[in-house]
Image 1: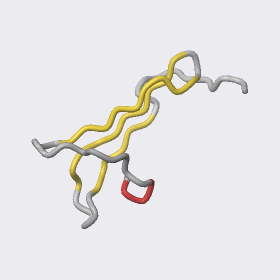
Image 2 (image 1 turned 180 degrees about the vertical axis):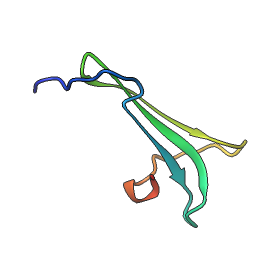
Image 3 (image 1 turned 30 degrees about the vertical axis):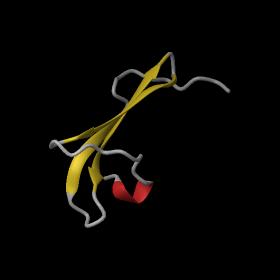
Image 4 (image 1 turned 45 degrees about the vertical axis):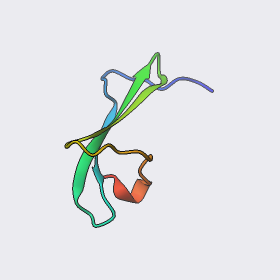
Length: 59
């Protein structure tokens, strides 16, 4: 599969929402040489995010 043309990092970012639709953290997508290299999920408070959010909980 050919690599994507990537000029910036992170290549995408989103806010992570809880089940009630409230923002609880964020997600960053990084690429290296046009391929996914890292996915960072972080919380804004002391409560850790322990599962990858479903796409409907990213905005």
